[in-house]
Amino acid sequence: MMRHLLSIDDLPAEELAGIVRRSARYALDERPARPGPLTGAVAGIYFRRTSTRTRTAFTVAALRLGADVIAFGPHDLQENTGESTSDTGRVLSSFLDVFVARTADAPAELRTMADQDTMAVINAMTSDEHPTQAIADLSTLQTLRGGLDGVRVCYIGEGNNTAAALALALARVPGARLHLVTPPGYGVPTETVAAAVRASAATGARITESHDPAELPDDADVLYTTRWQTTGTVKADPDWRTVFEPFRVTGEVMKRVPDAVFMHDLPAHRGEEVDAEVLDGERSVAFTQARHKLFSAMAVLEWAVAGAE
Image 1 (cartoon, one colour):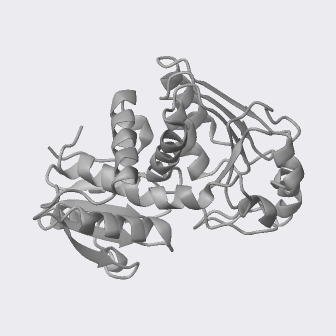
Image 2 (cartoon, rainbow, N blue to C red; image 1 turned 90 degrees about the vertical axis):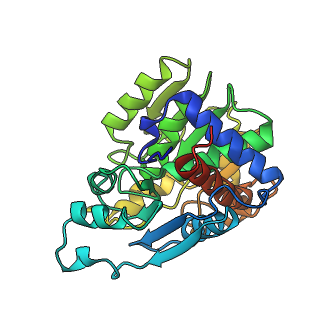
């Protein structure tokens, strides 16, 4: 049973919860029984943009699950010489069982790749969404808290692809609350917020957004930020750093959310979106969160290729 993971918005809440639970189980015992559930499968790992955590996590995850791996760099596929995405996907699906791709470009490309029924396609980041990051985030919280229901998250910073995926994911968690605090003009796209709100109707989750850094909920369980310069993007406003500066997470900001742990999807720029004392402080779980990228990759691959529930 082959399945694609292109957007969190494609997943019913119960399927997302199942992937997260499996990821959390891998966090407790990261080495699956042998032979692994992907034994005999071949995974293509294609990264057009830079990656430390996601590329390594999916490569190691595929190997630990028993698959063989073929790595493709940004100049390796014939799309660079004019072959259509449709033809590329059709050919690759003749050889591979799963194709994990980071493009940082429009999501339509991966949907075209997924227009076949023999190769699972996994979105390792497009311009609009980073779905496997959100699964790693929820897996981290599942492990730390023992459950996700009612979790309260405050996200501060640019409304980028990580924030979009987080909104779509938390909308599927019963009773969750997500408050997005984004710079004016840099919010989560309205269509993404609308999709999250639609999904939240079935779970009682609540998704809100404001553009005032003074509006941090003091009862948050999590304060989350990301780097200000998202991979593969350039901001049109040359003075954008001035706009973003009030949204930096400092020690003083953390005092305003006294019970919150700090999360960051990494890489981080200390002194820019977050101060070193926060990222390296005792309330930071950013590096635990990074390790969960391996567990979430294992869970996603098993779900997509082996049909795990």
